[in-house]
Image (cartoon, rainbow, N blue to C red; front, top):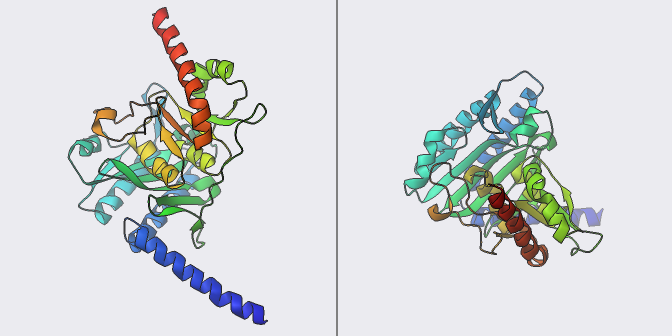
Length: 315
C-alpha cells in the first residue's frame, strides 16, 4: 500500500513535468496543439467510417487520384486552420489556388494533406493518414500525423520531441529505435512501388542485401523508420510535394534521422528546390538512420545514375 501511495504522486508529478515541457517547447500554444490533434482525429475517424461506403474517385493526373472524401476533408481542414491561425498561410493538396501562398512570403505556412496514401484508402487498405506540417522560414518545424485504421496519432517537432497517443489517452514520448546496422542478412529498406519498379533491380545489384518493402502513406513510411522497422526510406520519382513532406520530415528530424538527397545535401524547402507551380520537391529523398545513409547512399547514387543514363540513351 505504501508503495502505491508513493508511485501515484510520482506519476502525477511526471505528467505535470511532461505537460510543462511540451507547452514550453511547442511552437504553438498547448490549447491549439490539442485542437489540432482533436481535429485530425475527427477527420480521420470520418474517413475511416466512409471508407466502407460508396464514394467517387477522380483522376487528377497520371496515377494521381482524389476522392470526394479527400475534397471534403480538405475544405474542413483548410477552414479550421485559417480560423485558428489567421496570420499564417494555409496550403492544402486539393486547393490548387492555395499553392500561391508559398510565394507570398508568409513567415509560417501550414501544409495539409487530407488523405496521405489515397490509393490505399481507395482500395480499403489501412496505411493512409491525415497529415499537417508547419513550415517556418522554409524549415519544417512541426508535424501531426493521424493513422485512422490504427487510431494512432504521432506529432512533434524540432526542440520539442516526438509524441504518440491513441484515442483519448494522454500523449507519451515516442521512443525512436535505431535498427541494427545493415549486414548480408539484414537490411530493411522502404521504397515505393513506382521507385522499386524503376530502380529496384539496379539497387539490388549494388546492394544485394537490401530487403525492400512498402506502405501506402509517405508519412507512415517515415514513422516506420523512426520506429526502427526500416533503416532507410527511399523516394526518387519526383512526385512528392510539400503537404506530403513537411510534417513527416519535421518528425524525422526531431527523432534524429538524416533527411538528405543522393549527394548528401539536406532536404531543402526553399523556393529554389521546390517546383514553383506544383510545389514538388526537386531533390530525391532519403530518410534514415545515419549508419544506413552513410553506408548505402554512394551505392544508391550509382544505381540511380545508371538507370537514368540508360533511360536517356534509349530516347
